[in-house]
Image (cartoon, rainbow, N blue to C red; front, side, top):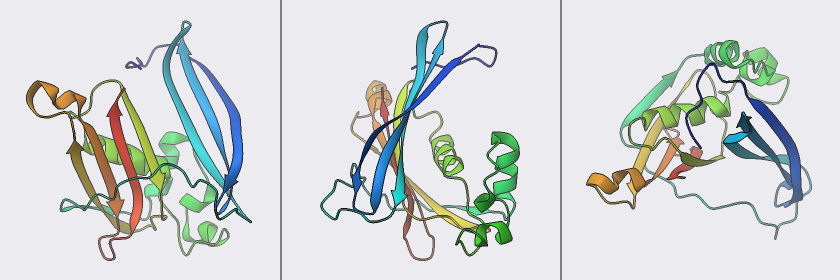
Amino acid sequence: HRPISAGEKLQVTCRPQALRPHPKGRAFDIATEVHSAGELVWEETTTLLRRGHGEPDADSGPPFEEVPPSGVCWRLPADLGRRYAAVSGDHNPIHLYRLTAKAFGFPRQIVHGMWSKARCLSALEGRLPEAVTVEVAFKKPVLLPGAVAFGARRTGGGGGRHAAHARWEFSLTSPKSGAPHLLGRATPA
């Protein structure tokens, strides 16, 4: 809702909600609100999927447009998961080493989804307003080391003074196959 300064004392509240069927299992939301001195400054909802027996006719979530790559390719080193874990505190073994990722069914370590989302938003720096609603869908894991192709396009809002009201759609795809890893959109709040 507004920029948060590094020195602010924050109150964070998280709660699970909306357990529901999904075509690939069961989905539920984790709703998070962040307050500063009683003022709501940030909020988010993360939808998680528990894979299992699903209901084929259940809602699979909001649709996202695929955005073709724009010629930008990011090379991702094998230690990206460990470097992100050092900053974020997220030391999930699927992100750290080939061996620990294999124990969870991945051929090698995968990039953090939040790193992917943040990297896309940083590529849009200067084009987004201070208050923005960001939605993403994680499609396929990004194996490390690896590469991803970034694509973005502005939709609506016009040019000039109306550019800040534009919605941006963005994606990360496989440079080889074009398969989507992440699809997203950022809309002025």
